[in-house]
Amino acid sequence: MRILGIETSCDETAAAIIEGESENKKIKLISNIIVSSLPFHSKTGGIIPETAAREQIKYIIPVINEAIEQCSNLPAGRQGLTIDDIDAIAVTVGPGLIGSLLVGVETAKTLSYIYKIPIIPVNHLFGHIYANWIMDNGKWKMENILFPAIALVVSGGHTDLVLIENHQKIKWLGGTRDDAAGEAFDKIGRLLNLSYPGGPSIEKAAKAGNPKTFRFPRPLIDSSDFDFSFSGLKTAVLREVAKLDKIDSKTVADISLAVQEAIVDVLIYKTLKAAQKYKVKSILLGGGVAANQKLRNELKLKIENSPASTSEAGRAKLKIPFFVPEKWLCTDNAAMIASAAFYNYKPVPWNKITANPELYFD
Image 1 (spheres, rainbow, N blue to C red):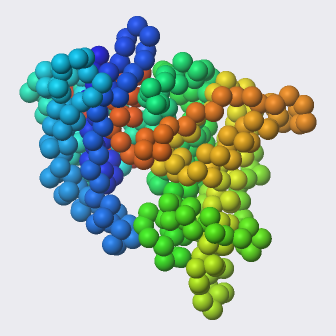
Image 2: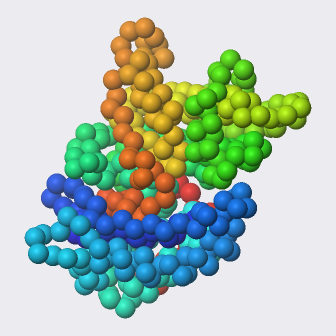
Image 3: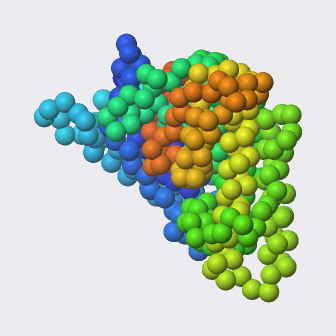
């Protein structure tokens, strides 16, 4: 089965094709095209919804055409595909910016109607989780992903923990009460006059930071639930910056390191707490912030050295397999949308599909 994925929830215009094997449930990526309007938003320090949607209108058809025509990993002699080779269309219906979502949704519906191709609406948040099932350097990681699993989805707009009992049963455990982790990175980056997006800029600056100079609060780290909160951290940084006479590159590096450590500490603590409580067999990471190398390294290290349960400190270790997509699959892309559709194949009539910017975990 070949699925064309379409993703336009924010500022990217993306199309990808995955090829899935129904018998063993393996998938491989045969094309992945992404066009971003980030250069426009970098100038303003954030995404301007109207600008993003206008750029997507210009690029959506060329991007889809390129994804279909410039495929790799095809049988010998095949040079690209045609629309007739597509068995299904998967499209992000939410959450996201309404103008951007409409570009992808209406395009997908039109293709579905004209070419009589089944269409599967996909929750963007599920997409980030299912990026973990895409072939990694020619190897099938998914064979080792066992259920139940805990997934941490952490991005610019969301920070959520979910329990995956199977592909059809995903339970939301907790999420952010205010700012998402990625949003905190972006806003704090702006405070420090770093380039947008703030996450990569803070990560880069943090490499030269001194861990002893600043320490910021770890919001809700001791709460009994699995919720997150990062607005207080943003305020703490704002107050610290206001005290300073000047902010030189060393101060920026020190603050960046302290911010990164605070966010990473909370994300890891809550994830391990959920893994211990639900006795999971896999831990998955997804979302744009999952590209942060500090988070990837620290979570892997803590999984290897944490007790299997809160009552077994110093004895049995978690020893849970940890999965995280390649960095280029962490940020928004259409491959993850097609992957989510393959493992949750539920076609819907094209005229029943609508964009929903407020879509969340059911």
